[in-house]
Length: 189
Image 1: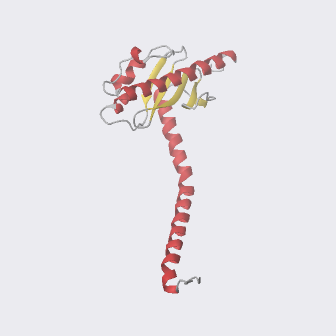
Image 2: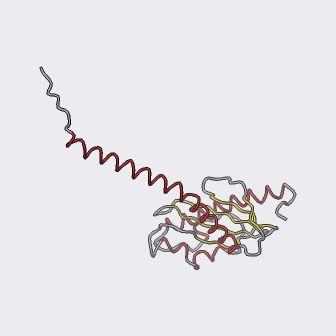
Image 3: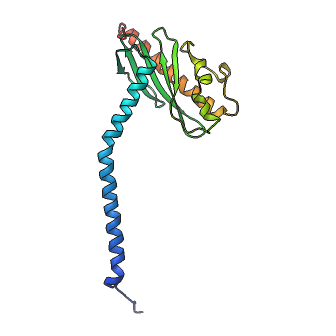
């Protein structure tokens, strides 16, 4: 049985070559843009984080990173000299991760909570960022909370549970971090 072997003519080959060249050029350009913008994106992220830290504990002179104990904790900063800690943690909600920044006083109480960007359901889950929800955590001791301990958002139990989980993750990190500092002879002073 003879095989029918046909080769592509230059006219048929030209669109394939043009398509491959176009894809290669687009890929190279995307890679170049990514390499050029990555440092700017990281710098902007750091500027936003520093601004948030200063808003949470304005009297701090500097913020020093702490060791992270959990995958859910994305940032841990000691506010010096002896002004407290800021811990950012996240938990899975209905529409993605719910991130919460928790500022702790040196005495171990929660100073302030700030909800960060989330993709929860608009009008329901996004209410974890509303003052009526986050203000209920201020002045509480750094002890794990249950959903029954707070005023959860009606119709957004998953988002409320995620926000509370992130706050509890921050509390657990704080307990570990502040006890480590105490064993070092009060390095937070």
